[in-house]
Image (tube, rainbow, N blue to C red; front, top):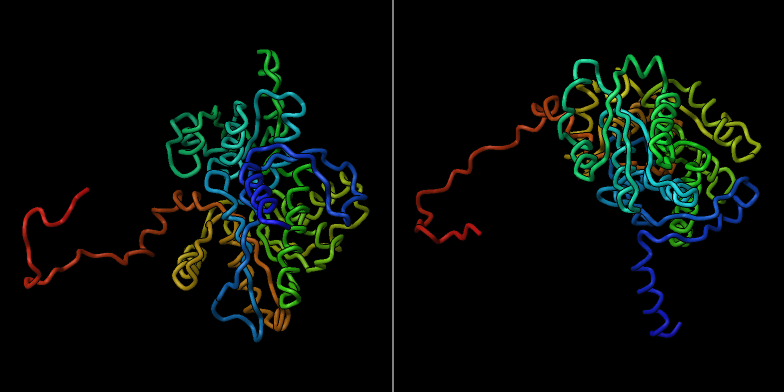
Length: 387
């Protein structure tokens, strides 16, 4: 390739962000049906992979980190990959607004709100909150700050009502109201996890394959480990790894519900793509919810702190923190199952969720104090520029 052509390709790639493109699936996924026709470029991809120097690993076990927390700032995390397909479908259907639903600190809802505004669409968020705060201003902590800054319409529902009505009925109710007002809403399910959203992590497997190929045989992953919160990410990873050349064993650590629920849910997603495979054959799902969704034990938060201190990697407490905690616990209890294996851990993002845990974590981060300056250090007013 001559220099001018190379520069031309590089300049075009600079303007790919927020562009809509025709989608061609990996060759090994070409028999899935339906295949999306278009994709919106929303993520900063490919995300890097690097060695993760975790302490106390089994003998000859190596862990690498796929940094999907670096897929962007406002849209960071695994939800962006799903939204690339879901937003393209919304635009194709002529939608003028997006409806989605999740917990009060939902990373998916924040990413959806930002993506909608990027594409000049209004966004309506139904957020699940405790009955103590459901009638109050929800505040500006973490994801809520970004959602409200970008102008999302936030509607709160109590956990009790949510449990009785369900996410599908709640989003459909809001959709009916908006249709009566003359709007054209597009509903995205919890976590963006439907068969269309599953393509986000089918495509991620192609990305990982290309990164592995670039190592010219030095790296071959035996296992993929990831958190599971709504099911779409593990459906795409498992199906892609099974269909493609990676052939890595996928381990999912469920941070809500239970493994049986997710085996059934993933089965529905892959059946929706006519994949012809049993979910039990392509993914191993373990329970890692602990005290419950978005509720952490002191041990889990201490683990998040220790991993940050020892490796520089900040895990979110709701998803990747629990998954990494579960992985390390399993490695300690069953080291023979992991010895000598190369493991790829998918960091799915969620940094803003940490801001909701500051009260619980304050006792873990007391490494501060007033600086003591020796008397011998010269002092003169105005010498230090204050900007």
